[in-house]
Amino acid sequence: MNSFFASCEQQDNHWLRGRPVAVCVYTGRQGCVIAPSIEAKGRGVKTGMRLDEAMQLCPDLVPVETHPSRYRDYHVKLINVLKRFADEVLPKSIDEAIVDLTRYQLAYPSMTDVARRIKQAIRTDVGDYLRCSIGIAPNAFLAKLASTLQKPDGLTIISPANIDDVLAKLTLTDLPGIAHGMSARLEAGGINTPLELRYASPDRLKLVCKSIVGWHWHLRLNFGGEVDMATQAYKQMQAIRSVSGAQRQSVETLHTILRTLCLTLERRMVRQQLFCQRLQGWVRYWNGKRYEDELTVSIPMQDGIDLYTTLCSRMDNYQQAHRCTPLLNADVRQIGVGVTDFMPADMVQYDLFEDNTRKDKFRQTLYAINDRFGPNTLVRATQIRPETPVKELIGFGSIKDLHDITDWEAV
Image 1 (cartoon, helix red, strand yellow):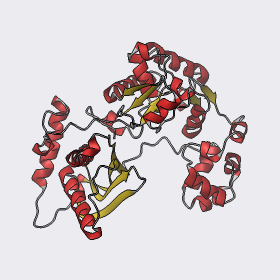
Image 2: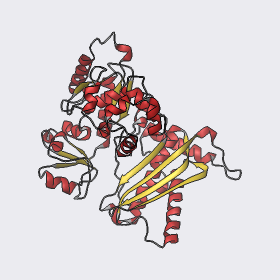
Image 3: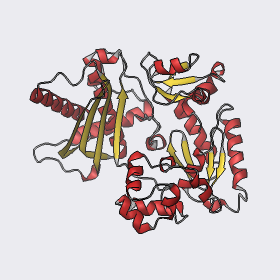
Image 4: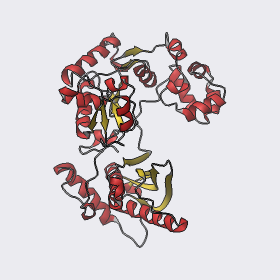
C-alpha cells in the first residue's frame, strides 16, 4: 500500500485529499513524522523527519495524529480482498502482503490481469483513495523488489527475461533486506552491484555473508526456490515508545511508559504461550546518547511487572555504581524493551522453593476475559495511575498477532 497511514486518513476525511498530510504520534513542534502522504512526499517530507522541520519545508503540511484502530481495520479489509483471489495470502506487515498464485496458473492465465483486478477491488470495496504498488515475479523476494520500483499505484513484472536489466539500474541497498551493514560486507568481498550479487557463486556468497544467507541470495536472484514465504516463529519481541515533550517532564509518566511496554510484551508472550530467557532495555536521549542493558535470566520470565521491576532495579544499580543522574529524565527521547530466547510455556521449570503456577494462570485468565469482553475489562491495580494514559502506537513491522487474536497492538 502506498503511504498507507496517510491514505487511510485521507480516505476517511475528504478534506485531507489532495493535500500534503503528515501522520504523527504527537503533533507538537518536535513531533515525528511517521507517515507522509503521497502529496507530502512530493514536497520533500520524509518518514522520521521532525515536524517543525517538515513544516519549514512544506508550510501547508497538515499534521494528523495516528488512529491505530483505523489502520488495523483497513488492513483486515485489504487482506479479505486478497483472499478472494487466492487462499495463500501471507501478511508481511500492516501495509504489505504476499499473494501466492503458484497453484492458480490455470485459473489466471494473465497475472497482470489479476493485479489490475486486485487494484480495482481495493478501490471499489475498501477505499477509492487507497493506492497500491504490485510486483509480479516467480518468488516473493523479486515480487517485493518489483513492488518498490514504481510508486505510487505501480505494476511491475520481474522475470528471467528482464531481471538483468532491472538489477543493472539498482544499487545493493536498493534490494530489500540489504542495509548499509550488509552492503559493506558484500563490497568487502568484491561484490559491488546487484548484478555481481546475482552472478556470484553460492560458495562465494556463503563465504562473504558468513552464513546460509549467502545461499538464500543466490536462490532469490536466480529463481532457484522460495525462501521468504514461510511464516517465521517469534525470534524476538520489542516494545518501543517515542516520548513527547510533555511526557518527559514527569518521571512518573516515564515509568508508566516503561511499565506499559513490559505489560505489552507480557500480553504477547501469554498469547503465544512463551516465556523469555533474555531481557533487554534501552533509553535514547535527545543529545544522541543512549543507555542499554541486557541480561539472561536463570528462571524464564513472562510477567510484565517482573520485567519492569527487574529493569528498574538494574537502572538503580547503574546509577549508584556510576554516580550519574537518573536514567529516566527530561532528556529522554525513546524507551524500548525487548525479550528473546523464548521457551514454550509447557517446558518451563520453576525454582524448587517458588511456585508461580497461580500467577501464570492469572495472566492467562486475564487476557482470555479481555479477549472476550474488551481489551480493558480487567486491569491490574498497578496499571491504574493518575497520569495521562500512554498513547497507543502502531508500527509497520510484524503483524502476526493481528491475525491470531482480536485485541492487537503493534509497538
